[in-house]
Image 1 (cartoon, chains in turn red, green):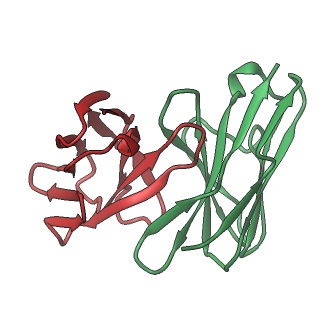
Image 2 (spheres, rainbow over the protein chains, first blue to last red):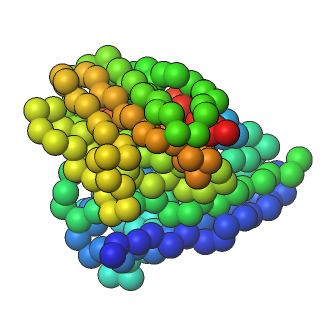
Length: 113
Length: 114
């Protein structure tokens, strides 16, 4: 079946450094790729997303890139801050069906002051 | 984005009992989704709730265990039936808002089965 692989599972960086999280997906029909941030005890929050007709999208310190040919997409966080510490999940839409998201296993990001 | 109210926020239940979780959205949405997040794990889709039709369940989830209601375009319930400790998880509802696949989550229900 379809799946999304996410790496690394944990990531520790110094404040101010950049962090990169990578995901690969298996369903070639996936056309929507959101990223969620989940702080401890809270709901996942959408932080950025990208659609298959775009190769890169940026929002302040956060950017996402998509390589459809290789079926992978990445989250880039620059100038990390302690409040960026959380678990980050990537997801991919399941084919052309509306509404189904398949999630990666998550990356626990720790930003050390 | 849509505002989702989910309740209860948490509960501790005895094994063998059932719990119904409610999800209320502040606007009409076509589809509502129910996810499970086991401790320290990712999110797994349980089912898609469509108004006016039976819910569509993912592999590994069955209607007898997780019956879902969707009486209108702003409300859905998920029942966790005949609970066992393995059902201890966070259950989240989710909706798509806007016309471009943005999905937002409710605050979740943290269920502990003892």
